[in-house]
Length: 193
Image (cartoon, rainbow, N blue to C red; front, side, top):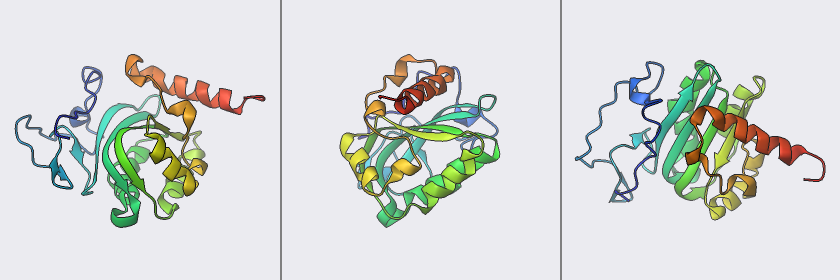
């Protein structure tokens, strides 16, 4: 797991440690010292600790003018034991919402498992942004993770499913990603789709 790095090709456009509004502002990284672990497996030091023992993040892109953020996730999303959604919401998302971010892409390629609890924090997040035309898209999560999310009906709060399963987001400039997500959403809502 220590070889899995967060996506870094947008660093010349955005870096959370240089963003004064970011929860990771002025965070220092040591490329040679591995300190964080998930279940006794060291992870790459570029992942950001949010206070969960199983879920780490990397804010890849934020654009306050278009009210949009991309967050890559790593590890196990465990609401049942660690209430990871509460930690993510309180430590990262709430600060972004305070700064008017209302559209979120969560990249889940490196989320290995999902363990649900209740949906209160998902509902709260949705309620916080829905009046602003906001949304949360869960992109490229593993199929079994989507299946677990559907069991607890997170599709009421997150855009999840097959249309987001294999999105080639790395080839798109980040500022155009919300348009791509909204195009997928419009197609999904179109009659006959």
